[in-house]
Amino acid sequence: MKKILITGANSYIGTSLENWLAQETDKYKVETINIRGNSWKENDFSIYDVVFHVAGIAHVSSDRRMEDLYYKVNRDLTIETAKKAKAEGVKQFIFMSSIIVYGDSSKNKRVIDSNTVPTPSNFYGKSKLQAEEGIKTLESDVFKVVVLRPPMIYGKRSKGNYPRLAKLAKKVPVFPDIDNERSMLHIDNLCEFNKIMIDHEESGLFFPQNKEYVKTSEMVRLIAEVNGKKIRLTKIFNGLLRLIEFKVAIVNKVFGNLVYEKSMSEYKVNYRIRDLRETIELTELESGQMIGNVQSKNVSEDLISIIMPAYNCGNFIGITLDSVINQTYQNWEVIMVDDCSTDDTAEVAQQYIKKDQRIKYHKLDKNCGAAVARNKAVDLAEGKYMAFLDSDDIWFPKKLTKQISFMEKNNYGFTCTSYTKIDEEGNYLNRTIKAQGKRDYEGVLKTCPGNSTVIYNAEKLGKYKIPDIKKRNDYVMWLQVIKNEQYLFGIEEPLGSHRIRIGAISSNKKSLVGYHWKVYREIEKLSLIKSSYLIVYWIVATVSKLR
Image (cartoon, rainbow, N blue to C red; front, side, top):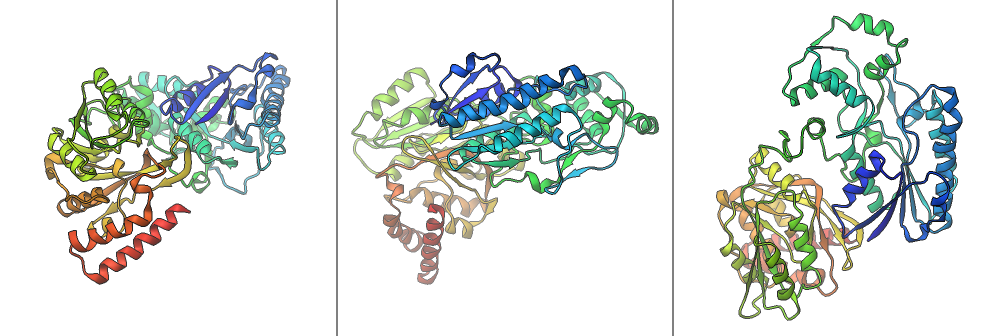
């Protein structure tokens, strides 16, 4: 578990990140601090792994009387906080800078690339840039510094230009149709990016932005549409607006051009979990009213049966069940089949059953193995969808919502997701296993999806039983499903964590070779040559994952 200190208590970005990380209480413990005055200097920073520094003056002012205050807060306080963090053993310092270090937007197309030199045009931008320069000198092998230069950040209850545009979109019947491009960043995409920076213990300079550039008039039209309004875009006013653009600052802010070249914002793990329409819906509508592709009216909330065989998992089953209870998708049942555990698995399960009747527990008369336990759970399941969860793994809160939405939107019957790996104590291992976008039978033969990531439509495809094989029985089930559904579709975003336990069946890779051979030759009836090829392929792929 990582301990994170957010400077700037009650700030929009700080509070948003705090709430975002609170979805995974097994991975993060977050505290906030107000660093006004001097009392904060008495706090012990040595207990934290990460300091996320967002405290500062976040608006642009042309009042020269404010200049000294900008440098004092945005530059000097940042450097002082970073020095304290380094001196007291903090491992990572994340600083929220801004695209403003590159100056103002432009009447003509303006693209910032990796060769663009910062040229701040006001003391807000200058103070941010000087803060960057000051903290970068502190970086070392044991003190990693992350500097973020995001574009305009928006989201529910955000301040700045977005709420002004939204207010206009709800009131005016017409709006200027000017061709411009701006980089923007929704607060959820920013929070996910910061979470990834923490997980990967990154350092360096980063430029997160939404996947799409934004044309102001199109965004206004979309805001109006989401709010049930119609707005007409017109070019009638374009000449006048272009004429006064550099005389009236607000016009340049609204209709100017300023974007990051898209490759600058790519990262090895996807952080852009919201597209533009979804972010507008999230920002404009009340909780539960979304009409897009996540928490929407289109997601039917059909019953999901969660198949969970269990054996001697008393130390972990509570955390696993909590991750189910905390799902944003709430129409589910857990079918837990206990394979005659000898620890306190049954006692822990009973405690949860008393609190939530959606959790159903069945204990086998004798230890029969995971295949028998899984088959029994499938027998008892009543849901339209079958989801699978190992009794020591963890789902992220929006796993079911996102995956069912993905299936219903695209009419997919068989899906999986990417996942991260954690150790026995729940610590992130800096390893993400990515789901392939599309796999057929041959693809599944080569690469088995993570068991706890799979959901299939049982109403469409039926229930599947598996032969009594001690190991790789989940693999056999997926090979059965793929023969009927033709394709397995994957979600790139990690939506859960797989726990690596010392002594667990799946952790002993050497012992799995024989079971893979049995699957290929005895169950799938593959030729000797093809089975040999697949064994070699599996060994090579497994070794590469362990690096």
